[in-house]
Length: 81
Image (cartoon, rainbow, N blue to C red; front, side):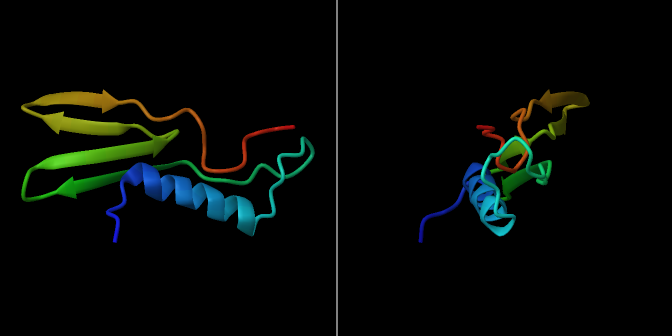
């Protein structure tokens, strides 16, 4: 089975939300969706993979805070016709 990345998971969520809410992209439809951040951590290698929809990752490492920017779109059908 293919190992999923956080980006794969968020893409699948986007597709399922569009289907579940019957979103078509029409201008007058409800724009329901969600903002989410997802991080996958490999505890054996201490590596992390991140994907975010409007939510950043705040990484604290060696007494420093790093902000990893998210994608500036929520999980929903944002392609307005």
